[in-house]
Length: 182
Image (cartoon, helix red, strand yellow):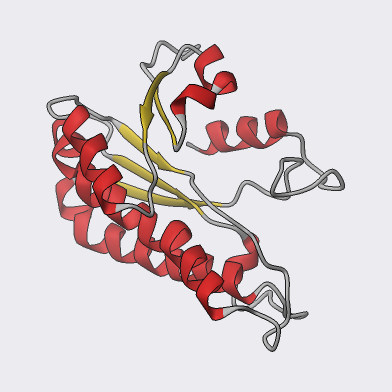
């Protein structure tokens, strides 16, 4: 917003999204794993031109080994981390096509790298982010002819509820790097 952009932020529970509200962003209800919620968000934003979409929802509930990973939880992780960005992007394509920026940024993770997985664990999260990378590459290939740019971004290891207190980046440092890249 400091650069003059109008920002729309989403939250599963907008009434509780105090930090988001403090930014001055318009807050819209959205649960990316719920098709009805995505449809309601798209209906609320009908006719709004969107220059850039940043798909950032993600969950990381398990850190277990292959043997200890709960498949039902893994499906929930996949629903949020992989299918969620696909579902939101599909729903907002009319808005994105009407916008000028034509940028889609999907938040991935270094843990989604197949080549860099030397220690295992976290199979559900890793697989969901690896799959998101492929969804993003497919989006890029299909939408390139319309002038879209699809970017996959890793925020680094960030001190958040998900990253924990031992992470090496503050949220501000991570955001600064992301904005520089964008």
